[in-house]
Length: 302
Ligand code: AMP
Ligand code: MG
Image (cartoon, rainbow, N blue to C red; front, side):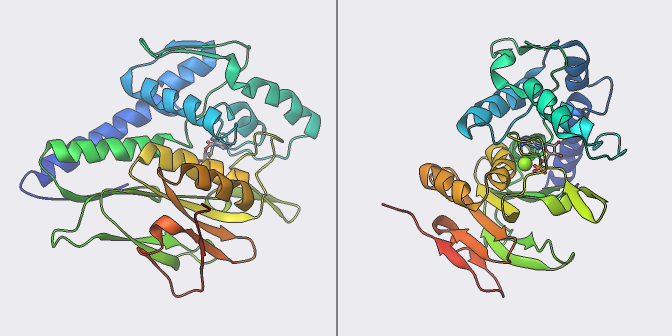
């Protein structure tokens, strides 16, 4: 993580933000036996505290909105591939098919009022890894503001949240990483008060028999999503949404992702990189994106 804040209370703001991040990790990390999510996964029921409940609620809502492309119940599948343990393996197709029965969102009972979650099928397990960082960085924006910090930048593992603008009033310049070569970037986005969040298979993967298997699962098949995209960057005022959609649109592939944007263009914009090296940018960020590469605009259909 990298936290930058300007203003007279900047140091206190950064300290508060850092302990908030630690707290969120302690609540939501699947790998930490004592976390609320780990306890939910072990017993199938849990009373979530306010932050984890808020993330769970958005995760379920976005699962419905994306027709299941974002699915917060993929943990059994992640385990089968060995991502949590780092003991990687390629599961058999019938093993995956069986595990996919545990990813049925209608089998989650969630009571918003008190944060009570229960799973309808034994063995169901939640994984908020595709959304938690975006929620956390958007909350940090609020923490910064509560300290009077109106200019700052929050980076959590490649997810960027701009707080206000730079101190001179000009927008933050956020680079979009080039998955092909580390340290280089595809382009730059100029943003104020927005989240810029990227998902791609290149972030975490293992190789077996010369084939790469990455960490973003297609909930329809249980296999790593291979729908022609190399990375998806979402730009939105809603950091939680941006994180979940970066994962979901990567799963959808370009055509379905563009359709989804057409329906929701008021809520977010996106930069897509395809496997063939094409960069596409949705209309709403056309004027704040710049790149040394050629790129195409996805226009709004009337
Ligand atoms: P991100 O880096 O935001 O794209 O999130 C990827 C992480 O989300 C993975 O490491 C898994 O923990 C989890 N995940 C994998 N596939 C999905 C999916 N289809 N929907 C939601 N979360 C997923
Ligand atoms: Mg995500």
